[in-house]
Image (tube, rainbow, N blue to C red; front, side, top):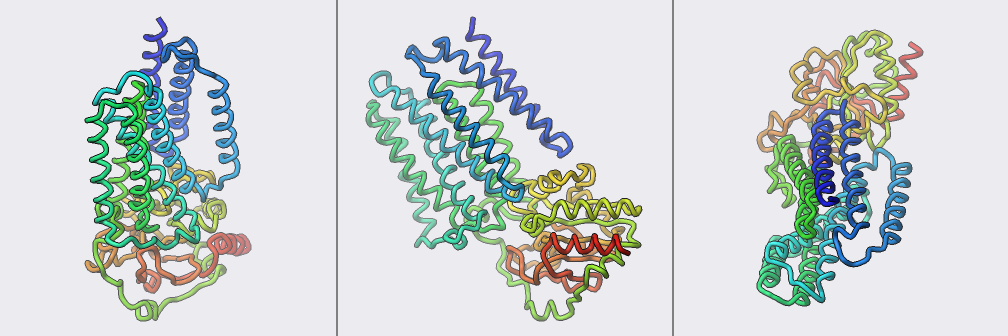
Length: 471
Protein backbone atom coordinates (compact mmCIF):
# COMPACT_ATOMS: atom_id res chain seq x y z
CA UNK A 1 0.00 0.00 0.00
CA UNK A 2 2.81 2.44 0.79
CA UNK A 3 4.55 2.22 -2.60
CA UNK A 4 1.58 3.56 -4.64
CA UNK A 5 1.13 6.38 -2.12
CA UNK A 6 4.80 7.36 -2.45
CA UNK A 7 4.57 7.37 -6.23
CA UNK A 8 1.42 9.51 -6.14
CA UNK A 9 3.17 11.96 -3.82
CA UNK A 10 6.05 12.11 -6.31
CA UNK A 11 3.59 13.01 -9.07
CA UNK A 12 2.08 15.75 -6.90
CA UNK A 13 5.57 17.05 -6.09
CA UNK A 14 6.43 17.10 -9.81
CA UNK A 15 3.27 19.08 -10.57
CA UNK A 16 4.26 21.58 -7.88
CA UNK A 17 7.73 21.87 -9.47
CA UNK A 18 6.21 22.63 -12.86
CA UNK A 19 3.74 25.15 -11.42
CA UNK A 20 6.56 26.75 -9.45
CA UNK A 21 8.73 27.15 -12.56
CA UNK A 22 5.80 28.72 -14.38
CA UNK A 23 5.22 31.18 -11.53
CA UNK A 24 8.92 32.07 -11.37
CA UNK A 25 8.74 33.25 -14.98
CA UNK A 26 7.44 36.65 -13.77
CA UNK A 27 8.89 38.80 -10.98
CA UNK A 28 5.44 39.46 -9.55
CA UNK A 29 4.72 35.77 -8.96
CA UNK A 30 8.30 34.58 -8.38
CA UNK A 31 7.97 34.34 -4.58
CA UNK A 32 4.84 32.21 -4.90
CA UNK A 33 6.60 30.01 -7.45
CA UNK A 34 9.54 29.53 -5.10
CA UNK A 35 7.19 28.45 -2.32
CA UNK A 36 5.43 25.98 -4.62
CA UNK A 37 8.73 24.43 -5.64
CA UNK A 38 9.93 24.23 -2.04
CA UNK A 39 6.63 22.63 -0.98
CA UNK A 40 7.01 20.01 -3.70
CA UNK A 41 10.52 19.17 -2.55
CA UNK A 42 9.41 18.99 1.11
CA UNK A 43 6.63 16.56 0.14
CA UNK A 44 9.05 14.39 -1.85
CA UNK A 45 11.62 14.29 0.97
CA UNK A 46 9.06 13.49 3.69
CA UNK A 47 7.45 10.68 1.70
CA UNK A 48 10.86 9.24 0.82
CA UNK A 49 11.81 9.18 4.51
CA UNK A 50 8.50 7.50 5.37
CA UNK A 51 9.17 4.89 2.71
CA UNK A 52 12.72 4.32 3.97
CA UNK A 53 11.47 4.01 7.55
CA UNK A 54 9.20 1.19 6.44
CA UNK A 55 11.96 -0.66 4.61
CA UNK A 56 10.72 0.34 1.17
CA UNK A 57 14.12 1.01 -0.41
CA UNK A 58 16.39 -1.51 1.27
CA UNK A 59 16.33 -4.60 3.41
CA UNK A 60 19.15 -3.14 5.46
CA UNK A 61 18.50 -1.02 8.52
CA UNK A 62 18.80 2.70 7.91
CA UNK A 63 20.12 4.95 10.66
CA UNK A 64 17.96 8.05 10.90
CA UNK A 65 20.55 9.55 13.22
CA UNK A 66 22.79 10.20 10.20
CA UNK A 67 19.86 11.56 8.18
CA UNK A 68 18.79 13.80 11.04
CA UNK A 69 22.33 15.06 11.55
CA UNK A 70 22.57 15.90 7.87
CA UNK A 71 19.25 17.74 7.92
CA UNK A 72 20.21 19.76 10.99
CA UNK A 73 23.67 20.59 9.62
CA UNK A 74 22.32 21.58 6.19
CA UNK A 75 19.47 23.62 7.66
CA UNK A 76 21.89 25.41 9.98
CA UNK A 77 24.27 26.31 7.18
CA UNK A 78 21.37 27.40 4.99
CA UNK A 79 19.91 29.61 7.73
CA UNK A 80 23.26 31.29 8.35
CA UNK A 81 23.76 31.93 4.64
CA UNK A 82 20.23 33.30 4.26
CA UNK A 83 20.80 35.81 7.06
CA UNK A 84 24.41 36.81 6.36
CA UNK A 85 24.86 36.77 2.58
CA UNK A 86 24.18 40.16 1.03
CA UNK A 87 21.95 40.46 -2.03
CA UNK A 88 24.98 41.70 -3.96
CA UNK A 89 26.60 38.33 -3.27
CA UNK A 90 23.73 36.29 -4.70
CA UNK A 91 25.65 35.32 -7.87
CA UNK A 92 28.40 33.73 -5.76
CA UNK A 93 25.81 31.91 -3.64
CA UNK A 94 23.99 30.61 -6.71
CA UNK A 95 27.30 29.35 -8.10
CA UNK A 96 27.94 27.46 -4.86
CA UNK A 97 24.42 26.00 -4.87
CA UNK A 98 24.97 24.70 -8.39
CA UNK A 99 28.29 23.22 -7.35
CA UNK A 100 26.96 21.45 -4.27
CA UNK A 101 24.13 20.00 -6.33
CA UNK A 102 26.72 18.50 -8.68
CA UNK A 103 28.80 17.18 -5.79
CA UNK A 104 25.73 15.52 -4.25
CA UNK A 105 25.10 13.67 -7.51
CA UNK A 106 28.69 12.40 -7.57
CA UNK A 107 28.48 11.04 -4.02
CA UNK A 108 25.00 9.52 -4.36
CA UNK A 109 26.03 7.64 -7.51
CA UNK A 110 29.24 6.53 -5.77
CA UNK A 111 27.29 5.34 -2.73
CA UNK A 112 25.06 3.23 -4.96
CA UNK A 113 28.14 1.68 -6.56
CA UNK A 114 29.77 0.90 -3.21
CA UNK A 115 26.51 -0.55 -1.86
CA UNK A 116 26.77 -3.25 -4.53
CA UNK A 117 30.40 -4.14 -3.80
CA UNK A 118 29.43 -7.57 -2.54
CA UNK A 119 26.48 -8.39 -4.73
CA UNK A 120 24.57 -7.59 -7.90
CA UNK A 121 26.37 -5.92 -10.81
CA UNK A 122 24.65 -2.89 -12.36
CA UNK A 123 22.96 -3.20 -15.74
CA UNK A 124 24.29 -1.27 -18.72
CA UNK A 125 21.72 1.55 -18.59
CA UNK A 126 22.35 2.12 -14.89
CA UNK A 127 26.11 2.11 -15.45
CA UNK A 128 25.71 4.80 -18.11
CA UNK A 129 23.62 6.87 -15.70
CA UNK A 130 26.22 6.36 -12.96
CA UNK A 131 29.05 7.51 -15.19
CA UNK A 132 26.95 10.50 -16.32
CA UNK A 133 26.34 11.45 -12.68
CA UNK A 134 30.07 11.37 -11.98
CA UNK A 135 31.04 13.28 -15.13
CA UNK A 136 28.40 16.01 -15.08
CA UNK A 137 28.40 16.32 -11.28
CA UNK A 138 32.18 16.70 -11.02
CA UNK A 139 32.33 19.19 -13.90
CA UNK A 140 29.53 21.17 -12.24
CA UNK A 141 31.13 21.19 -8.80
CA UNK A 142 34.61 22.28 -9.80
CA UNK A 143 33.38 24.59 -12.54
CA UNK A 144 31.09 26.27 -10.02
CA UNK A 145 33.94 26.71 -7.55
CA UNK A 146 35.98 28.47 -10.25
CA UNK A 147 32.96 30.63 -11.11
CA UNK A 148 32.58 31.47 -7.41
CA UNK A 149 36.22 32.52 -7.23
CA UNK A 150 35.84 34.79 -10.25
CA UNK A 151 32.64 36.35 -8.94
CA UNK A 152 34.19 36.84 -5.51
CA UNK A 153 37.20 38.41 -7.27
CA UNK A 154 39.67 36.26 -5.36
CA UNK A 155 43.19 37.47 -6.11
CA UNK A 156 44.36 34.12 -7.50
CA UNK A 157 41.29 33.86 -9.75
CA UNK A 158 41.25 37.34 -11.31
CA UNK A 159 43.35 36.21 -14.24
CA UNK A 160 42.91 32.75 -15.77
CA UNK A 161 45.97 30.53 -15.56
CA UNK A 162 47.39 29.54 -18.91
CA UNK A 163 47.31 25.94 -20.07
CA UNK A 164 49.37 25.15 -23.20
CA UNK A 165 47.15 23.84 -26.01
CA UNK A 166 44.17 23.94 -23.66
CA UNK A 167 41.61 22.90 -26.28
CA UNK A 168 43.70 19.84 -27.10
CA UNK A 169 44.02 19.05 -23.38
CA UNK A 170 40.26 19.40 -22.89
CA UNK A 171 39.59 17.18 -25.88
CA UNK A 172 42.06 14.59 -24.62
CA UNK A 173 40.47 14.53 -21.16
CA UNK A 174 37.02 14.13 -22.69
CA UNK A 175 38.24 11.23 -24.86
CA UNK A 176 39.80 9.46 -21.86
CA UNK A 177 36.60 9.89 -19.83
CA UNK A 178 34.57 8.38 -22.69
CA UNK A 179 36.99 5.43 -22.90
CA UNK A 180 36.76 4.85 -19.14
CA UNK A 181 32.96 4.89 -19.39
CA UNK A 182 33.12 2.29 -22.16
CA UNK A 183 35.41 0.28 -19.92
CA UNK A 184 32.75 0.35 -17.18
CA UNK A 185 30.15 -0.97 -19.62
CA UNK A 186 32.40 -3.81 -20.79
CA UNK A 187 33.37 -4.97 -17.30
CA UNK A 188 31.40 -7.38 -15.13
CA UNK A 189 33.44 -6.65 -12.01
CA UNK A 190 31.89 -4.29 -9.46
CA UNK A 191 35.40 -3.59 -8.15
CA UNK A 192 36.46 -2.45 -11.61
CA UNK A 193 33.33 -0.31 -11.86
CA UNK A 194 34.25 1.45 -8.63
CA UNK A 195 37.86 2.01 -9.72
CA UNK A 196 36.90 3.37 -13.13
CA UNK A 197 34.21 5.60 -11.59
CA UNK A 198 36.77 7.18 -9.27
CA UNK A 199 39.06 7.94 -12.21
CA UNK A 200 36.12 9.32 -14.21
CA UNK A 201 35.15 11.67 -11.38
CA UNK A 202 38.75 12.84 -10.90
CA UNK A 203 39.32 13.55 -14.60
CA UNK A 204 35.92 15.27 -14.87
CA UNK A 205 36.94 17.48 -11.92
CA UNK A 206 40.04 18.62 -13.82
CA UNK A 207 37.91 19.18 -16.92
CA UNK A 208 35.46 21.31 -14.92
CA UNK A 209 38.26 23.61 -13.79
CA UNK A 210 39.79 23.89 -17.26
CA UNK A 211 36.46 24.59 -18.97
CA UNK A 212 35.52 27.43 -16.61
CA UNK A 213 38.98 28.93 -16.07
CA UNK A 214 39.28 30.99 -19.31
CA UNK A 215 35.73 32.41 -19.20
CA UNK A 216 35.64 36.09 -18.31
CA UNK A 217 33.43 38.02 -15.90
CA UNK A 218 31.26 39.42 -18.70
CA UNK A 219 30.06 35.91 -19.49
CA UNK A 220 29.20 34.95 -15.92
CA UNK A 221 25.40 35.19 -16.43
CA UNK A 222 25.70 32.58 -19.18
CA UNK A 223 28.09 30.40 -17.15
CA UNK A 224 25.83 30.37 -14.09
CA UNK A 225 22.80 29.45 -16.20
CA UNK A 226 24.78 26.67 -17.88
CA UNK A 227 26.13 25.29 -14.58
CA UNK A 228 22.59 25.36 -13.22
CA UNK A 229 21.56 23.22 -16.17
CA UNK A 230 24.46 20.84 -15.52
CA UNK A 231 23.43 20.39 -11.89
CA UNK A 232 19.93 19.46 -13.02
CA UNK A 233 21.20 16.96 -15.58
CA UNK A 234 23.47 15.39 -12.96
CA UNK A 235 20.49 15.04 -10.61
CA UNK A 236 18.38 13.46 -13.36
CA UNK A 237 21.12 10.94 -14.10
CA UNK A 238 21.38 10.14 -10.40
CA UNK A 239 17.62 9.56 -10.36
CA UNK A 240 18.11 6.76 -12.88
CA UNK A 241 20.92 5.33 -10.74
CA UNK A 242 18.77 5.02 -7.60
CA UNK A 243 15.49 4.53 -9.50
CA UNK A 244 13.81 7.65 -8.07
CA UNK A 245 11.17 9.17 -10.34
CA UNK A 246 10.86 12.54 -8.62
CA UNK A 247 14.61 13.10 -8.83
CA UNK A 248 14.53 12.30 -12.55
CA UNK A 249 11.68 14.75 -13.13
CA UNK A 250 13.12 17.53 -10.95
CA UNK A 251 16.56 17.17 -12.51
CA UNK A 252 15.11 17.20 -16.01
CA UNK A 253 13.14 20.37 -15.27
CA UNK A 254 16.21 22.14 -13.90
CA UNK A 255 18.35 20.92 -16.79
CA UNK A 256 15.85 21.99 -19.45
CA UNK A 257 15.12 25.38 -17.88
CA UNK A 258 18.85 26.00 -17.48
CA UNK A 259 19.47 25.28 -21.15
CA UNK A 260 16.65 27.64 -22.18
CA UNK A 261 17.96 30.36 -19.87
CA UNK A 262 21.49 29.87 -21.22
CA UNK A 263 20.22 30.33 -24.75
CA UNK A 264 18.33 33.49 -23.76
CA UNK A 265 21.47 34.89 -22.14
CA UNK A 266 23.53 34.15 -25.25
CA UNK A 267 20.91 35.85 -27.41
CA UNK A 268 20.93 38.91 -25.15
CA UNK A 269 24.71 39.16 -25.61
CA UNK A 270 24.65 38.26 -29.32
CA UNK A 271 27.11 35.50 -28.47
CA UNK A 272 27.13 31.84 -29.37
CA UNK A 273 27.47 29.28 -26.61
CA UNK A 274 30.61 28.01 -28.33
CA UNK A 275 32.24 31.45 -28.03
CA UNK A 276 31.30 31.76 -24.38
CA UNK A 277 32.63 28.32 -23.46
CA UNK A 278 35.91 28.95 -25.20
CA UNK A 279 36.31 32.41 -23.70
CA UNK A 280 36.53 34.41 -26.92
CA UNK A 281 34.58 37.29 -28.41
CA UNK A 282 32.84 37.11 -31.77
CA UNK A 283 34.80 40.04 -33.11
CA UNK A 284 38.16 41.54 -32.39
CA UNK A 285 37.86 45.32 -32.63
CA UNK A 286 39.36 47.72 -30.12
CA UNK A 287 36.38 50.05 -29.97
CA UNK A 288 38.36 53.16 -30.95
CA UNK A 289 40.74 55.56 -29.21
CA UNK A 290 39.47 56.47 -25.75
CA UNK A 291 41.17 59.89 -25.65
CA UNK A 292 39.49 60.94 -28.88
CA UNK A 293 36.10 59.53 -27.93
CA UNK A 294 36.12 61.15 -24.50
CA UNK A 295 37.45 64.53 -25.67
CA UNK A 296 34.07 66.23 -25.17
CA UNK A 297 32.84 64.49 -22.02
CA UNK A 298 30.87 66.83 -19.75
CA UNK A 299 30.74 66.32 -16.00
CA UNK A 300 27.94 67.49 -13.73
CA UNK A 301 27.08 67.75 -10.05
CA UNK A 302 24.34 66.35 -7.85
CA UNK A 303 22.79 69.81 -7.58
CA UNK A 304 22.62 70.21 -11.36
CA UNK A 305 21.09 66.76 -11.76
CA UNK A 306 18.48 67.66 -9.14
CA UNK A 307 17.57 70.79 -11.13
CA UNK A 308 17.09 68.70 -14.27
CA UNK A 309 14.94 66.18 -12.40
CA UNK A 310 12.69 68.92 -11.00
CA UNK A 311 10.98 69.34 -14.36
CA UNK A 312 11.23 65.75 -15.60
CA UNK A 313 7.96 63.98 -16.33
CA UNK A 314 9.41 60.55 -17.09
CA UNK A 315 12.59 59.17 -15.53
CA UNK A 316 14.12 55.79 -16.36
CA UNK A 317 16.79 54.19 -14.17
CA UNK A 318 19.18 51.80 -15.92
CA UNK A 319 20.97 49.69 -13.28
CA UNK A 320 24.18 47.72 -13.82
CA UNK A 321 26.78 45.84 -11.85
CA UNK A 322 28.10 49.13 -10.44
CA UNK A 323 24.81 49.56 -8.59
CA UNK A 324 25.27 46.12 -7.06
CA UNK A 325 28.85 46.85 -6.00
CA UNK A 326 27.82 50.17 -4.42
CA UNK A 327 24.72 48.56 -2.84
CA UNK A 328 22.78 51.52 -4.14
CA UNK A 329 19.44 49.79 -4.75
CA UNK A 330 17.75 51.25 -1.66
CA UNK A 331 19.03 54.75 -2.45
CA UNK A 332 17.73 54.39 -6.01
CA UNK A 333 14.34 53.26 -4.71
CA UNK A 334 14.13 56.30 -2.39
CA UNK A 335 15.04 58.69 -5.20
CA UNK A 336 12.43 57.04 -7.40
CA UNK A 337 9.76 57.48 -4.72
CA UNK A 338 10.68 61.14 -4.26
CA UNK A 339 10.34 61.74 -8.00
CA UNK A 340 6.94 60.03 -8.01
CA UNK A 341 5.79 62.23 -5.15
CA UNK A 342 6.66 65.17 -7.39
CA UNK A 343 4.48 63.80 -10.19
CA UNK A 344 7.07 62.05 -12.37
CA UNK A 345 6.68 58.60 -13.89
CA UNK A 346 9.56 56.37 -12.79
CA UNK A 347 10.58 53.12 -14.48
CA UNK A 348 13.53 50.75 -14.41
CA UNK A 349 15.06 49.36 -17.61
CA UNK A 350 16.47 45.87 -17.09
CA UNK A 351 18.97 44.34 -19.49
CA UNK A 352 19.03 40.50 -19.37
CA UNK A 353 22.79 40.30 -18.71
CA UNK A 354 23.23 43.35 -16.48
CA UNK A 355 25.12 42.13 -13.43
CA UNK A 356 26.69 38.75 -12.73
CA UNK A 357 23.75 36.35 -12.97
CA UNK A 358 20.41 36.10 -14.79
CA UNK A 359 17.92 38.44 -13.14
CA UNK A 360 20.58 40.05 -10.93
CA UNK A 361 19.09 43.56 -11.20
CA UNK A 362 15.55 42.26 -10.67
CA UNK A 363 16.66 40.56 -7.46
CA UNK A 364 18.39 43.67 -6.11
CA UNK A 365 15.52 46.04 -6.90
CA UNK A 366 12.92 43.60 -5.59
CA UNK A 367 14.94 43.40 -2.36
CA UNK A 368 14.60 47.20 -2.17
CA UNK A 369 10.80 46.88 -2.54
CA UNK A 370 10.61 48.39 -6.01
CA UNK A 371 7.21 47.65 -7.57
CA UNK A 372 7.52 44.69 -9.97
CA UNK A 373 5.40 46.46 -12.58
CA UNK A 374 8.06 49.15 -12.90
CA UNK A 375 10.80 46.66 -13.84
CA UNK A 376 10.64 46.71 -17.63
CA UNK A 377 12.58 44.39 -19.90
CA UNK A 378 14.78 45.79 -22.64
CA UNK A 379 12.41 44.89 -25.48
CA UNK A 380 9.51 46.56 -23.67
CA UNK A 381 11.16 49.86 -22.83
CA UNK A 382 13.34 50.46 -25.90
CA UNK A 383 10.49 51.53 -28.24
CA UNK A 384 9.57 54.36 -25.83
CA UNK A 385 13.01 55.56 -24.76
CA UNK A 386 12.71 58.60 -27.04
CA UNK A 387 9.91 59.89 -24.77
CA UNK A 388 12.09 59.64 -21.66
CA UNK A 389 13.04 63.02 -20.15
CA UNK A 390 15.95 61.72 -18.05
CA UNK A 391 17.69 58.35 -18.15
CA UNK A 392 19.91 57.70 -15.14
CA UNK A 393 22.53 55.01 -15.80
CA UNK A 394 23.98 53.57 -12.58
CA UNK A 395 27.02 51.39 -13.06
CA UNK A 396 26.00 50.00 -16.46
CA UNK A 397 28.44 50.19 -19.36
CA UNK A 398 28.46 47.65 -22.17
CA UNK A 399 24.68 47.14 -22.04
CA UNK A 400 24.14 50.83 -22.97
CA UNK A 401 27.09 51.21 -25.38
CA UNK A 402 25.78 52.43 -28.78
CA UNK A 403 28.88 51.00 -30.48
CA UNK A 404 27.02 47.68 -30.45
CA UNK A 405 24.75 49.12 -33.15
CA UNK A 406 27.21 51.27 -35.09
CA UNK A 407 30.53 49.40 -35.29
CA UNK A 408 30.41 45.91 -36.87
CA UNK A 409 34.04 45.34 -35.83
CA UNK A 410 33.39 46.00 -32.15
CA UNK A 411 33.65 43.11 -29.65
CA UNK A 412 30.00 43.76 -28.73
CA UNK A 413 28.77 44.24 -32.30
CA UNK A 414 25.14 43.20 -32.62
CA UNK A 415 24.54 42.86 -28.90
CA UNK A 416 21.08 44.22 -28.04
CA UNK A 417 21.41 47.27 -25.77
CA UNK A 418 19.11 49.59 -23.86
CA UNK A 419 18.66 52.67 -26.07
CA UNK A 420 19.40 55.28 -23.39
CA UNK A 421 21.08 57.44 -26.05
CA UNK A 422 17.58 58.27 -27.34
CA UNK A 423 16.53 59.91 -24.05
CA UNK A 424 16.43 63.71 -23.92
CA UNK A 425 19.01 63.78 -21.11
CA UNK A 426 21.29 60.99 -19.93
CA UNK A 427 23.00 61.05 -16.55
CA UNK A 428 25.75 58.43 -16.13
CA UNK A 429 26.78 57.72 -12.55
CA UNK A 430 30.19 56.10 -12.56
CA UNK A 431 33.45 56.29 -10.66
CA UNK A 432 35.49 56.97 -13.79
CA UNK A 433 35.55 56.55 -17.55
CA UNK A 434 36.96 53.04 -17.22
CA UNK A 435 35.61 50.54 -19.73
CA UNK A 436 33.20 47.70 -19.02
CA UNK A 437 33.90 43.99 -19.31
CA UNK A 438 34.32 44.25 -23.08
CA UNK A 439 37.26 46.61 -22.53
CA UNK A 440 36.16 49.28 -25.04
CA UNK A 441 35.26 52.99 -24.69
CA UNK A 442 31.62 54.03 -24.56
CA UNK A 443 30.72 56.99 -26.87
CA UNK A 444 27.54 57.49 -24.84
CA UNK A 445 29.64 59.19 -22.15
CA UNK A 446 30.56 61.95 -24.61
CA UNK A 447 27.17 62.28 -26.33
CA UNK A 448 25.63 65.75 -26.63
CA UNK A 449 22.71 64.77 -24.39
CA UNK A 450 24.84 63.00 -21.78
CA UNK A 451 26.59 64.12 -18.59
CA UNK A 452 28.86 62.22 -16.21
CA UNK A 453 28.33 62.29 -12.45
CA UNK A 454 31.52 60.82 -11.04
CA UNK A 455 31.48 58.97 -7.73
CA UNK A 456 30.24 55.95 -5.83
CA UNK A 457 26.78 54.95 -7.02
CA UNK A 458 25.14 55.01 -3.61
CA UNK A 459 26.75 58.28 -2.49
CA UNK A 460 25.89 60.00 -5.79
CA UNK A 461 22.22 58.97 -5.63
CA UNK A 462 21.99 60.08 -1.98
CA UNK A 463 23.46 63.45 -2.90
CA UNK A 464 20.96 63.88 -5.72
CA UNK A 465 18.11 62.96 -3.36
CA UNK A 466 19.28 65.49 -0.77
CA UNK A 467 19.66 68.24 -3.37
CA UNK A 468 16.19 67.47 -4.78
CA UNK A 469 14.59 67.66 -1.33
CA UNK A 470 16.25 71.02 -0.69
CA UNK A 471 15.30 72.44 -4.08
